Image 1: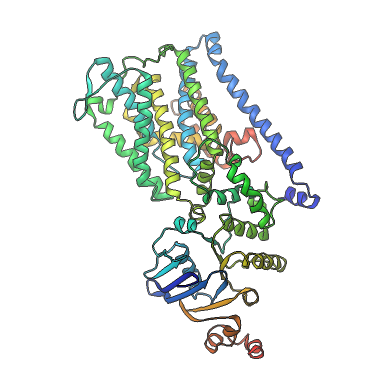
Image 2: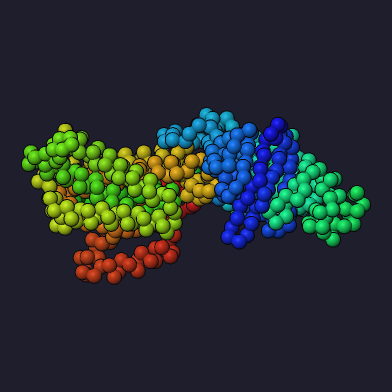
Length: 257
Length: 351
């Protein structure tokens, strides 16, 4: 598997009559930003759920960091360094920004069967909380309940929580969904900054963002990977153009090839 | 919302928020302090009014408060809606009662496989009650925590009812009729037969449990539990083996209810399967809801409100339930954070 951090081999998953993943394979090299794109209903989220462990594939294998993780449970994968951020932002609304991040830090620093000392006084958490807030630009918002954050800030917090455990790889599920133009610019900056430190699998609808950020792109149609390559290769791939980019991108595609 | 926008504009995060926090703490602290003082001087008031019954009533209230606080650990903080909490209460009560009766008679509880004799020493019996309740909670929790939502409610209810029928059919210990204690347990240095001493012991037990619970909910463990309440799948994807944490929380709550059970046996000097019936679980649940779920002092106020209302209404009418029911509906509709939330105000997430 060489220098691939994540390797997926012939994954298949069926929901009744629907084949959500069909002989799906994917290689994500260490350090790259790999984007997974595809039309609505192509099975992107199903793939992501199998990678993070929320779904078990019917067939196929997943290797992460050289180890098979196909049947490993969600929290074990997270502790191996495979972090995920969700399409529907799922931060803990009742907790403050600081508490949200300290939970994420806790998850990766020993067990939490500690009943006596206040969580905020734990030296490990105290040491890590500042940098964790800074990393996603929330250092001034520590005591604000997550419910009171703006949409963009909640995204930042979501990503911050995924990063708090210093994962090897980040699965980003449609981070641009529901984001205004201002927030999108901020987010692109954030992802660009992250790109240098961490391997990322980006699932995204926003083509502009994908072609700006991605080192390589895999195109998913009806649960199957129909192409994989650099943004230029994908732009010029006939099958992709036909299946996915379609008419709307014809002009742009022609000029690029 | 508006306040936060304001803070962002002026760039002062700590200032206004801190002020709000302080005011909130003060009002809460005040409420708790007043309640504590009232409970401390209650025996004097009872003596002055020549109403010894007050002591009995309030001992009962304190014991149920302890059970309610323990339930709130899983319900209000952990988001596990158990309708079988009385099972642990009952197991604690029966443990103490059965061992005491044998201790009084001088007969063995078990002669095989290991001989176990009876005893009347609280220092042995009460820890035994706590341990057995915790063990029962471990077994019941391990099975029922594999489900969630409505299934969890039904499974905890089913287990509690199983235990209820077990004790109903346990003829050796009174079956349906229950069984009486010959005397309260012995505790070195105290005379539990004295109602006033027993009252203070209950108060101390509640205070210690509240203190421990307060440490617990603010600890790393407590944070994990609160996270699980809000979004368990997310906790798993952060890397927490959530099942273990929730199970331990369930066991701790069971242990607390077991201690309450040990105390109630000594208070009433009688146990019956009714202690485990699902209506009892419901009553404890109502105390939590009434007082304020997700706070520690809420359930104490809830137990107090419910039992006092029960007492007062039953002076005037036999059908006090008719009045209590609508009252509960009103509280649930209009004071969602319960009596404690109403008194303490603000939106602090734990007390």
